[in-house]
Length: 234
Image (cartoon, rainbow, N blue to C red; front, side):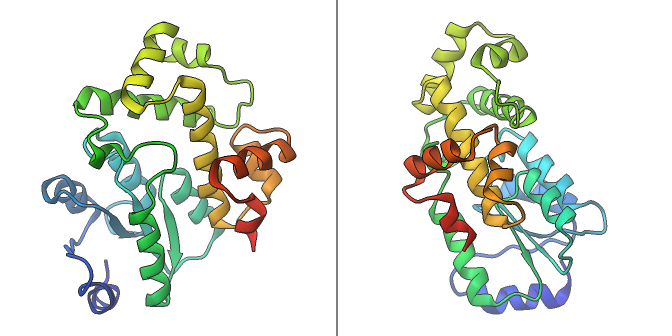
C-alpha cells in the first residue's frame, strides 16, 4: 500500500478500528491469520502479486476463507473490477474515494455477514478445520459451475466424491441448511455481490448465477433479501 493511501486510512479509520499495515501481498498472507483479522483492505495492484491472487490465497486457506476482502485501486477498468469480484472480494473501491463512503461500505461488510449462511469463522458454527475445508471445497465446486442452471446436488456429490446422504448430513451439520437451500442461497448471495458492482444488467447477473429467467430470479432475490434487485441498480 502506498504511503498516501496508508496516511489517509490512518486518518480516517484509526479512531474506529485497530489497523495493521503491511507492504506486500505475501506479508499480508502471513500476517492475516496471526492477528485474527476481521477485514482485509488491499491495493488491487501490488508489487509482488495482483489482488485476485491475494484473494485466491485467502480463500484457499481454511482458517481465512471466510475473511472479507475490500480492494482499493486507482484503476477503474471493468475487467480489473470483475477479476477482483470473481476472486471473492466483497467490494472494489476506486481511488480517490470519499472517506465517509469508504467507512460506510466497510461498516456494511463487517456488520452484514452473508445472509442465510452463518459467519462461520466467528460464530462457532464450524468448529473443526475439516468443516471449514469441506465448505471451502463445496463453495469452489459451486462457484466453478455457478452459471450452470442445470447444476444439481447429485453433480456436486459426484464432483466431491460423496454420497447424497453424506452430503446432506455434512451440509446440514455445518450450516443448518439442506443442500438445495445452500445452493440457492449461495447463488443469490453471489448475485447480490455482482449487482453491487453495477457492471451488469439484472438479466446478465441472473444468467451468471444460474437463473435463465430474470423474472423468477427477481422473485427469488426479493424473497431472500427483502427487496428487489432493481433497487440495487439505482
